[in-house]
Structures are given as C-alpha cells and as structure tokens.
Length: 253
Length: 274
Image (cartoon, rainbow over all chains, first blue to last red; front, side, top):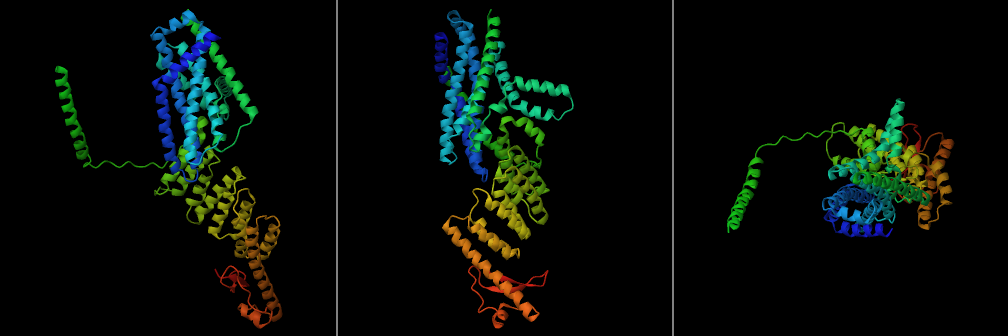
C-alpha cells in the first residue's frame, strides 16, 4: 500500500512538471479563446455555446494529455532504466497500480484547474452555472477509463506512438459505438446487430457517462445516476488495471 | 571564430530571404486566383449522428453558426438550404431554440415560405412544449399572413407557458378586434383578469377591456339601428342623431372610432384609428 502511494506521489510530482501538461493547458486556453469568438457569432445561444465548448475543450485537451504525456512518460522510464529500478523494489501490481492512480489524479488536477479557468471565462460572459463542475466530474470519470486504456496499451505495445494512437482510437470507438448501434438496429442482419451490441457493451459507454448535454442547459443529474456511473467507471478501471498487470508480468518475465 | 563567420553568413541569407518572400507574395497577387465555388450542401443526419458521439450539441452549434454566417449570402434555393441546415442542427440538439427562430421566422420571405416556416416551428413546438417563444413565433408568422384567428390561438398558447411576457396577454384585445371577434375577446380577457396578480398589468388589461367593450357596445347599437330603420348606418354620427348613443365614446388607445364596411359580409364594423 505504502509502496503504491510512494509511486503515486512521485509520478504526480513529475507529471505536473512535464511540459506536455502545460502544453495541454495552453491548448485548452486557445480553445477557450476560440469559444468566446464563436459565442459572439451564435445569435441568442451564446451562453449554451460557451458552456459546451468549455466542457468539450477540457475533455479534448485532457485526452491529449493522457494519450501523449502519460504514454511517453511510461516509455521514458523504460528507456532510462528507471522502470528496472522501480521493479527491484516494488511488485508489478504495486508499480502499475501506482501509475494508474497517479494518471487519474493528474487528470483530476488538470480538470480542476481547467474547470476553474473555464468558470472564470463563463462568469465574465454571464454564462456561469455551478453545474459546470458536475460536467467536469463526468469528463473526469470518462477519462479515468482512458487512463486505464493508456496503461493497458503501454504495457502491451513496444512503441509509444502505437499506444497513443490506440488510446485515442479506443476513445473514438467508445464515443461512436452507441450511434453505430442505433443505425445498425434498423438492419435486418441479426449477426451484425448481435456483434455490435457485444462491442457496445464491452467498450466503455461514453454516452451514459457523459453529462455535458444536461449541464449546458442547467439541468442537474440525479445523485443515484452519478453513483451508478461512478461505480461503473471504478469497475471498468479495475478490469483494465488487472489486464495491464497480467500483460505486464508476462512481458517482463 | 569560424562559427561567428558561419553565423553571419546564415544571418545574411535569412535577411535576403525575408526580403524575397514578401516581394514574391506581392508579385503572385497580380495573378488572378480562381475563385472557389461555394457548395451549398448539408451533411446527412445519419453520418453526423454517427460521427458526433457525445459531442452532438457541439456539432449542432457548429451547423447553427454555419447557418448564421451564411444568411447574408445569396444561396440557390435559399429557403430549402437554410431550412435543411437549421433542421439538422435541431435534430442534433432539439433545445437549440434560436435555430427555430432563424429557420422559421428570419429565413422565410413570401407567403409560401412563411407557411413552410410555420411547419418547421410546429415541429419545434412538439419537441419543446414548455418553450413560450415557439408558439409566439408561429403566431407572428400567422400575423404576417393576416390569419388573426390563428394568431390568437398561438399567442394564447404562448401566454399560458412559463416565462412568457405580459404583453402577450394584453395584446390579445387588439388581436380579437382585428379578427372581428371582440365579444369572444371580452369574455376571455375578463376571465383572464381573475388570474393576473401584477397590478400594473391588470390596469393595462382593464383599459384594453374598456376599449374592446366600447367597440362591442357600438356594434350592438349598429344592430339596433338596422332593426329600427332597415338599413345599416353610414357612420357613427347616425347613431348619435337617432339617439341610440349620447355621443361617440372616447377611444382610449386609438385616435377615434369609425365605421368601415366589411368587404366579405357588407356589414359595417367599428374600427379604431391607430
């Protein structure tokens, strides 16, 4: 337990100091600036557009942080032999557990900072709602799963670019699976329907975890629903963690 | 020392190139560039639904903004193109209320297009039953078409919804007058007064009811005149001459009442000069 915590603290300190963390932040600020411009163009819907683009910017910039910063950090430890040093003192499970928790916490810190910045911009444009933080919570839950995917692909593949692209593709697949299922439901081919249903239920259900649509119109999701999606994300992240440990052990053996 | 010479050479090359680039740019701008032809195309809803994922509202807003920016342009088959665009944005996000306004009120010109705009707004009303602005816009479109009975129907609907402004209720008096249904208007508005709690709005409403009551009373006297003399009066002074009324009543909103023959029925109607 203490070994895992020490890895978590080390990785958090390192992760926040990384240039990619602040590069993601600058990208987010650029998108926020763009949102103010787009808000001026959208007649009568300025507040909704501002809130929507703020939340989307947080999500996209954090996804880039996960796909590039976390992946490259993992592979850098391998190339600098730091991983070997860690593994001589910690077990594989503790090492990966610490990595996953640190990724999730860095995401949380990033999302909180971005949410406060977005809230400030929204407040200046009279579009602020306290529910923005609930929207950020939904984004945090969604991206926690992709921290798990990032860890899984980093353990599986030998090349960082492959892991980064696979993480992004996993995200896209989870976003599109629900709509693909809706379209295929009209088809008469039973096998395709069953296959897509299976894919949909295996992939993370981004349509259920996402709270953006309700938040931008000021609606508060029910507490029961929030507890439900939190539990779902916890179980999914655990699954990805154990898969990563299995693959990592076999590779390192 | 060698490094310094090399650096100076590189710097000189950069300076020369910095001068050459804008010169070439100026020279190239003399050549006429083929103007890009704009394609007025809206993506199919199926594809947009597939690629948007949980970013559906964002896609809806981008298409909505595309529509706003394209409004000043002379697009071929303008109504169809913009209606398609705003239809797509509301299919992605039904709560984008101003898309209904732009597609249903701003874009249509002419009777046929306004009718198409009304159909579009009715779709929005079904998707947003508690939004007062949509039935108000439908009523506004019917006002353009001169169908006052429909204007009354939709303004009444809008005035009953939460957040609607008080003028929707107070303006009904004028609309009932324009629709030649002042008696029906009086009955409705007197009943409505029981539910108005704001004293200021109640005062305005009572003044409008008085105005409408005067019109109704004058029309009753016109009927009496016809029953007595077998002909319709030519003007309101005839009622005063025949002592059916003491004097022509004051018009609290217009500049006086007068008689005007209705083109369809031939029956004189009391009008208010505005």
